[in-house]
Amino acid sequence: MPKQIKLSLITFLLLVLAINVKSQVLDSHQKLQTLSSAALSNTASVLGLNVALPYSVDIYKINYFTTDENGNNEIASGMVVIPTDSCAGYPMGLYAHGTVLKRDDVPSRNNGEGTIGKLFAGAGYVMVLPDYLGMGDNPGFHPYVHAETQATASIDAMRAARELCSDLNTNLDGDVFITGYSQGGHAAMATHQYIQENNLQNEFRVRAAAPASGPYDMSGIQAGGIISGSPYSNPGYVVYLIKGYQQAYGNLYNNSIAELLRAPYDVTIPPLLDGTHTLSDLNNAMPSRIDSFMKAGFLNDIRSTYQSKNHPLWQNLLDNDVYNWVPDSATRMYYCTGDEQVEYQNSIKADSFMNAMGAQDVAAYSQGPSNHGGCVVPSLYSVITYFDSLSTPCNAVDTTSTFAHFRSEPELRVYPNPARSVLNVEIAEPATITLYELSGREVMSRELNDTKKLPVYNLNPGVYLLRVVSENTTQLKRVVVSH
Image (cartoon, rainbow, N blue to C red; front, side, top):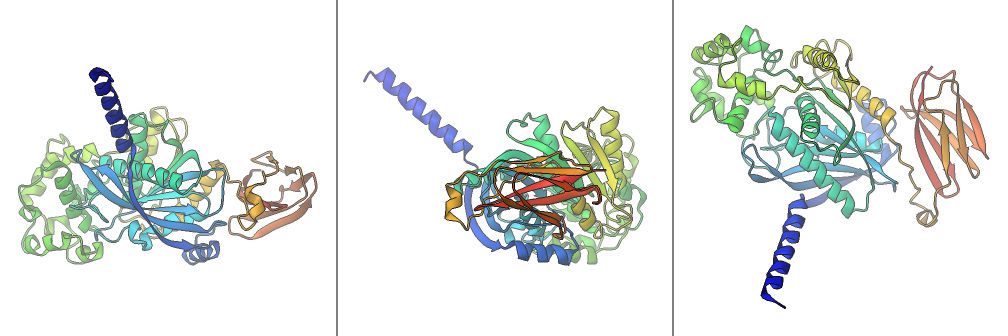
């Protein structure tokens, strides 16, 4: 073989290898647990989340490749939760978790932070829950409420989850649903924005995003407490934010956050930011007023530049505003007017800006007067109900029957959907059809030979689950009743 051809072949092979290496995002995975549909439904009931969870799930910890705030390659961790039923294609869901200070209080540790992802997976989504940079297995300090790294960690986690699904022969339908709560609301909005502004829509077909109780206007509404000096329920957020932005930008102090803290907090606070303490530990060690723990000189510099934004902190906050763009995909924001941690006006401002700039399908909805903790369940109920109204339901196969793996499912038609007075259910063989509320309560059951007209005019408007059982197959459809 001529030398030139040989070199060209070697170059080609090296390029192919490089492409393959680059495309591999998943580093490793570990199965943590399997949870039954009944166990998930019990958890949902305890939490007061009144939804139907027909799927059992497998829970995995993943390690995956991503980049840090400086563009350096890193390995991060997260959780992926996969329904166990065979399916023509599940939608993928992203849940971005709320603020935690302790490194191990993250989804990959299979603790409380992963609960929401498990419940959503029980509803029929492959759920992805990134730990974020500086949390879980990733070293360093977490760049708290930093839009870009929240987005890239989330996007790379979804890529890794896609590879995991391929390895496990789990089918995805290509749709992506994005949500998150509190800091996770900010992360969800940042991820949605990053996908759109970096032209990743072909890779991530965002069907809808529904962040909840997020601080979208970091430089304005959410920073109001810094300006006013009023008592704040979570003063730890302030030092967490400053140290996090120092991690991301390096422009707020020289060596230690102690430089910006009054005595005795310059001594007592820094050790609580070592990743082994909780946010409650930090809040309990601080007074509620920012003027009591931050140095006057720093606060004067911040307050005097509020209008001009001519200070590194304001520049950092501006860089992490995520309200001022126009989503192409459907977007809902959920909030509570009694929220003492994240100003609910963040959602109002984002909704107003996006619609004023021509957004086609953006809305913000109040979930009542609850506080930040009390807003979780009503918000997430609204999120899953909204997602269910848009997602393509899985046509599940009863895997207890070996025959089902070799037998094609009979065609099932359900129309109109949404239905106002009558829902038509059509299938080519005898079947039993049962309609359930999302709470799991049976609404009606019928035997079906060809086409059955189900009266739905007397049902409350909302999303229902239709289960159609024929010979060796079970098919599920989500239907919407609208009067």
